[in-house]
Length: 92
Image (cartoon, rainbow, N blue to C red; front, top):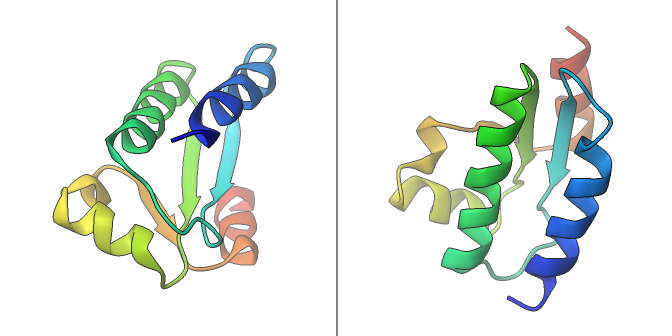
């Protein structure tokens, strides 16, 4: 939870000057995510879609894909296992 304000600030800086952002967030090294973290991901997805952009979450095989599945958020996010996979998807 302590990392959420830092991530929110970084995302604000990255997204502020953009139109139609193509964004990938690498969550493969994230050991824990609570409702505050999920809320930030959902609000970021909403913001990116409002900007006519695209957001891909790089989730690997850790806790994050399971968490997204049990909350049904996996139906709303584009997911990939690797950063290279996200790059290829965004480049297509």
